[in-house]
Image (tube, rainbow over all chains, first blue to last red; front, side, top):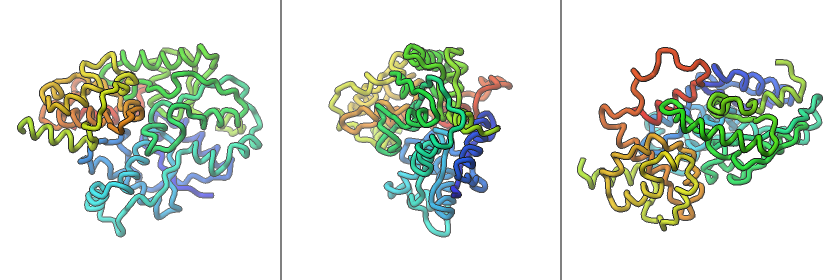
Length: 259
Length: 128
């Protein structure tokens, strides 16, 4: 099966590990990720102001491409997923934004939220199936692993519809599928400190340490995430409390995929 | 802009109806940046209801909000305090000379582990 894929700026640079392992694992599981042509940076944060139109256009271009190429747009970075999914909701439900965005873009046929945005984890769950992943595992990851969701995958839940925003389970199900033991800890859906690190690293330091200490106290040996900024904050501002990896790195390890 | 125009703009671009707030305080109770904010999330909402534009535009909290959407998620009345914070921040940075990140403050070589995502997000949030 082929699926249109939006990598985003960081996955081509500092987060190559996330991109490369995800592609190889998808291939091993029978899914071909087809990178869309001429994609542009999504902007990394969803512009909430109702009069922000130009800042949403790169997401709309990617969505329109997916609409004409299989109908689904696969995302991997949590931030891209958040921006593109929320923009898609605007294009579907907000007449003013849809009208003005289409005025800018002048596509052959106006875009109205037709594409479906699918995160890699959702793809593993619904397209491949966790049971099939379990069958494909050759090297079970027999460790205690803490899932770090952060904010971007879950909230706002009305739009993201990713999982239960207060008590999510999808990454824990993923950890079980690759042979690990999920560790539930209180701060797994708390913010890591996000982009504030550029102006002031005190807040991200406090937040990231709190997340990692909370996971460590519950017995986690490592943390997995889908977000390059969470990884950075947890690793650098969390000051080495626990090892932090991308979830796809563990998937590659379990499937015996050589990177 | 007059005070009334500021109130109208912030209300409009926030896209949320602050009059629905019932002052339960859950938004501030859930906010991970609460300690660092001079104006708390529930106060952004109530100051906008009152039309106290000066207090909003002078707030330092607009630089501390993480846009984590925890306040939005917990509001029992469907108000989006984070969208009010963003509307105030946008109103501030859209005025000339008010960018939150100055190019000259960024060292020529930033921490080499910093992901592009962090630079793009910070510039999108703090600058116009």
